[in-house]
Amino acid sequence: MTETIRCLWIGFAVGVLGLLRRCIEAEPRLLRLTRRAWMQPVLRWSCRMKALRVHLDAARRCPAYRAFLEAQGCEPATRWADFKDIPATDKENYVKRYAIEARCYGGEIPRAGVVIDESSGSSGRPNNWVRGRAELASVRRLIQFAYRQAYGDRPMIVLNCFALGAWATGMNVTMSLADIAMIKSIGPDKDRVDNTLREFGDGYRYLIAGYPPFLKNYADTAGVDLPSYDIHLVLGGEGMSEGLRDHLLGSFTTVRSSFGASDLEINIGVETAKTIALRRRCVRDVGLCRALFGRPTPPMIFQYNPADYYIEASREGELIFTVARRANIAPKVRYNLRDEGGVIAMDRLNTVLAEQGVAAGEIGRDESALPLLYVFGRSDMTVAFYGANLYPGDIEAAINREPELTAACNGFQMRVEEDRVSLRPTLVITLERSESGASPMPDPGRLREMFLTRLVEVNQDFREVRKMFDADQLAVEIEDYGAGPFSDRDIRVKSRYLG
Image 1 (cartoon, helix red, strand yellow):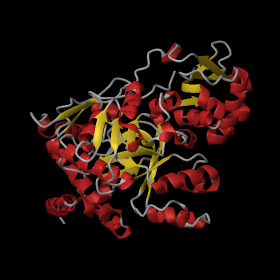
Image 2: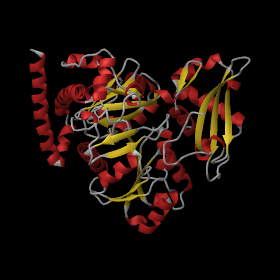
Image 3: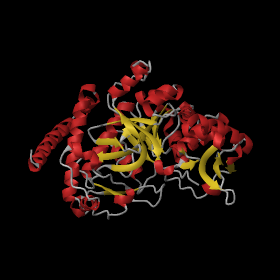
Image 4: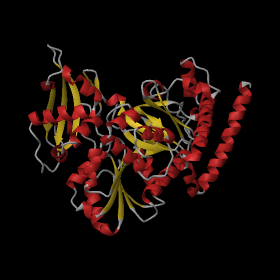
C-alpha cells in the first residue's frame, strides 16, 4: 500500500468515525454506549485512527509542529506502528520554543470564536492557550455527561469556586454547566459561599467546585453548619489523599476529583464510584496496589473516554497525551505533561483483581467499562532526598494520617537544604497553621516523629533510604497562617509546594 493510499484510507476512516460521533452526540443518551465493554475495542481503534490523522494534519498544516518534526529529524508517521516513535512534545521543546500562532493550524489564530486561557504558572511562567468553538463544544458535552452521570438530573446549585478570569478551569466550568444547572460563579471566596448557603438554605442540593487547599480551608472555617446541607464537592487542579477525602466527608455528602490541564483540556478524566472504591481498597491492600501500580501508595485514579484522548506512558513513566480531535485549532500530538502515571484497561483490571483474590463486584458498582487513568503527580514538582523522590501528595498523605495534624495545618511546603561545610542534606517541611487556630500544632520534635513514621508508610523510596540518614536530617518549621512563605499566596491559582 503506497503512502498516498494509506493516507486516503486514514482520512476515509476518520470521516466515517466523525459522522458516527456526531450522530451519537446529537442524542446525549447514546453517549452511554461508550461505557459498554463491547465498545472499548472500537473506541481504542477509532482513537488510534483519529490520533494518526491529527498528527498528519498537524505536520502538513501547523507550522510549529512541522518545524518541530524537522528539528527532530523525523518524518511524519503514516502507519500506526510508527506513531509511538514520533518525538514527544512538551512545554520546553514545543510550547516555549514556538509562537502561539505557529502552534495553530494555518499559522494564525482565528479572528472570532476563540477563548484564550492562561495556566496558573505554579511551575514557572504562565502560558497562554487558545481554544476554538468546536473544542469548547466538545469539552462542554464531556463535562455535562460526567455531571449527569455523577449527580443525575435533580436540581442542583453549582458554586464555582475555581479561579475566574483568564484561568482555564473556572470559566470553562461556568460555560459548560450554565445550561443544565443553576450556577453561581464565585471564585475562591469563602464568605460568598457562606452567604449563598444562607440565602438559599438547606432545601437545595449544592455542588461546590474548587482546588483542594481552598476547599479544605473552607471546610475548617465555614461560618455555616455544613453537615446540615446536602453539599457535594468536585476538586481539581491537584491530587488529594484518602485522608483528606475522609476529612472532607465529615462536612460534605460526596467528594470527587477531576483530572485535566490547561495545557490540554479540563475534565480529561473523572473519579467514579468504581475508581474511588478501588483507590480506597488499595490503601488497605498494599499487594493489590503494587500489582496494579508498582508502588505501595495508590495514585489518583480516574476513568476517561478513549475516543477523545490517546494516552500512553513514556519509558520514564510519564503520561503522553494526544487529543484526537481534528477540530481543535492548536493540535496536541504526543504531548508530555510531565505527570507520572499510566493507563489500565478494564479487562486488565479485572484480571489483576482475580489474581489478587478480589471479586470485581467488591470494587464499586459503577457499570462503566471505560479505561483507568492513574496519576502519581508532577515529576517536576518533587524533591529528591537521598535518591527518594517525594511528591506533594506524600506530604499531604502523611499530614492527613494524623488527625491532630489535619485539623491544625492549612498548608505546607517542602525543600531540601544542604550544609555548606558537611554537604549533608536536610529535608525541610514548612507547615502553615490553620486559619482558625482552634487546634494546637504539635511541637517540632513530635512533628519530626510523625513525618518520619508516616513518610515511611506512604513512600516506598523513602522507606528504602531511611537507614541512610539521621532523624535530625528531617526538620519541621511552623509558620502562622499567611506568614513566611505563605504570605504571598494567590488563592486564585494552585498552591506552590516547593520552598
